[in-house]
Length: 479
Image 1 (tube, helix red, strand yellow):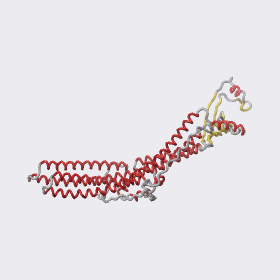
Image 2 (cartoon, rainbow, N blue to C red; image 1 turned 90 degrees about the horizontal axis):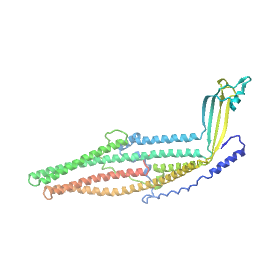
Image 3 (cartoon, one colour; image 1 turned 180 degrees about the vertical axis):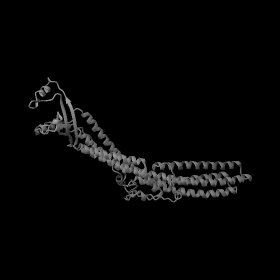
């Protein structure tokens, strides 16, 4: 249906009423269910102070770790990829905003036409004079220079809702970038503590090798004095070899962990500067979790899911507006003639037009219904994703808080175990020298001491990782 703007009002109302009647058949969809309410507290704590508001430079104390995080935030490829996604989303806003404005262009055209003499147009041209005594040329040229404009009037907010959805998605990509930053900081810290823990494990294995080698020399001396057997010598020798094999395995793990950090930092393999001596003195940070409601403001992934849900809702409104009639206004102004020397003669060569089109979908409604249903399904998906993100955030924090509490108790017990086994090594050595225990007791005591020391370092590393994870899970690090 095409309606000229010069038409009388009653001529405009008739087709408009038909369009609205067609649009009134838009399918109805059930409203979204209400989102679930998050619990009021973590572990029955009502303290609203949260470490999520602490800047990461303040939260981490090791200057080497801070330097590594700085490099990662500048060079990490995944973060750079995310920044380009923000640029893409920003450009999409410009595209949607441009759709709200009239499209204006300039056209230049030239052509020639020869029609049959015995046609209505040919007969008319032959009987027409440009000026007295001067007939129309044959063939007839066509020269045109004109400006054109097309504007879809956004009467149902279809284009505005589309732009708002693009803005929401842009803001979602910004929150996605913040989430990448939070995760990157946590990953660098995890790998750094892993590297320092491996250094300390390597030092313990080397100490154990020295202790075992000394015991081996004692057994060899006792064998020469007929106080021990070749079996004891071979057992001690095997234990030394096992410990040396463990040393090389740890060296390989150190290399792999260094490379993992270098990958996060966007650089080729090089030694990672760290201070491994202070590992035993490192204390986990004091954790203040705040209340679950603060996750909605602090966790970037939750805010990202919320913005994506808002964009999905706007997409449904945009899809619904496709059922309503659209009003488009087109206009043109320029000059038109069949010869160059007539092109700029005014007003005879001037052309202009103005028209309005009111169009409602009639035949292809099944495609619009399908797109509308798909938009609503994506909206429901976004709602479930939002709820799932909140649930996952709460459970992550809850798990980490429990882990921190249990690891603290476990570390105290393992520290006592290591102290007892260190004393037992000295006792076993003295008893072995006096032939009051056999070599097997010494071997088992050394082995148990080595395992417990390595486990103690693993527990300390797990403690440090847990406070990093709870900082990340509470939404800290990106501000």
